[in-house]
Image (cartoon, rainbow, N blue to C red; front, side, top):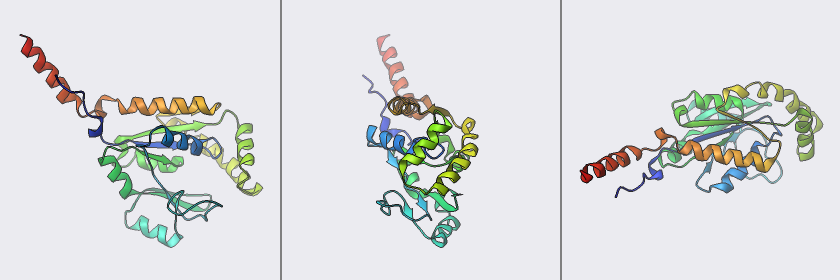
Length: 219
């Protein structure tokens, strides 16, 4: 009897998760990584200063502007953008290695980075998801409740959120994060379904060929 196609043979997904600041993409990212430990997190490089408790190489690769620009010039960034006066980007090497090994990579990035990945040579392997807040009032409440940024920074993030939300229609899927548990469950369903797309199961052709051989043996 023919065995089922091996999932390990598929190319890894590039999971793009975006939202305005405060809508919940970081929390959803942590939920997704806990849901499936086989998903790798793409640790971005950034020129912003570390926040209390952040560790270089864990939350971000903290780099000077000169170091970051050197990586861009050398073609070492899959995507990069300037946000709130700081540079952010995804190192290319670890992403390509994971994809070829059949491991999915999660990107917690803004719409600019997501757009660059979707338009890149790796775009066919990307699935993009945008997270919306239930309301602007709730978005402001969440930003203020984090107690991580000054009032000036929060005001800047709120002003930027309208532009970020305007890009929602560019994404494959859009989730409204009214309830975190329900939103996380929807996210898991999306990833499970995307992995099962016909074109992402390279073993299917051999499996169907084996089924046809079995039909022939019956005659």
